[in-house]
Length: 428
Image 1 (cartoon, rainbow, N blue to C red):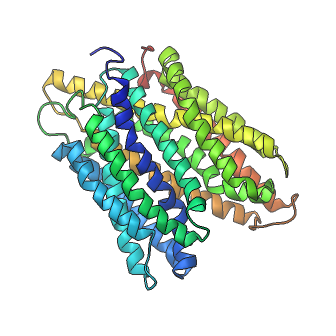
Image 2: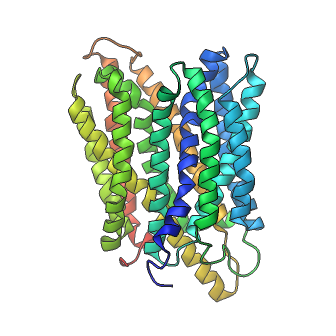
Image 3: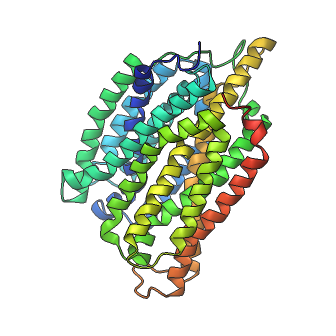
């Protein structure tokens, strides 16, 4: 099969399922705490504890789900089994009954997380198994992430359009999610291409420990983790930064839309740059753009809305590369392992196991970022709604939002540069 042999319509069909999966992630991680604290009346500390424990458990089981998925082997069937769990869990989670309490929250979260994780791991592993060439694999991840960014934008905009009351809007959002998920799943199952190669070499896949014994994957994971923390810290603090440093709380929605839309618009450009110069160099270029954006953000004052809009556009464009290129590099690595396994007549660890570990790191980054950023700004005196623009607390907020991620991103860039030859050969 030659480069570009997978038709565009099949790439689009595969990417369609990325829309509802990303759509689900936004209310799952952003709106649920406020919903159960304000509308249901659970203590905020209790909601936080439940979310922390369920999210940690969710991250821990991802590698096991990936390994189990490789043993069963049928990606479409596993996704088809996971999606009803996700649909039921999400609809119930966003529509708690009047007497819904801690048990309702725990059960619906568990159901939603299991369905979401099982679907996502196998969906990403399926994408890694589609293309036979490096350029096909980056096209697959780009198609998926364009739909995913669209799902995030729609999920962010819909609640305010569905109802004025937040609880009612989220209940309606859960109802809307179910048909969106069904339509996208039908499109993907009907039109997406089959895997170009089996997930393993000869015989059953190797145990999960084989994933951690792979030094190239370990180094790629280190780069992903450091870069991911650098991206997750500003994501945790951005609404506080907009409200208290820029004093532009009414522009929050616009800034978020600019960020995600520019991420989607930039993806074709990153794909073209990766085709010409290689995925690693394109990823490094996106890191430089992100670092420059973070540093510029630290220099802003109250009312600098246009400048921050440009920063959102630039950092959003960098996000597009970070969503598409690292998974494509992992897909290239998995293709090499499959080829080596077939030639040697031995098994290789399946794509599900790799993406299970990958998902664990991604989710752990979100938890770690909140664990670092929020206590740090509080330690230096930041209080929500602070009025003095020159206060030490606001300076600490700006530095944690902008300079700390820039410093961590520099570390990620240096690691990627050091290990660049292990991740990618000559551009193809």
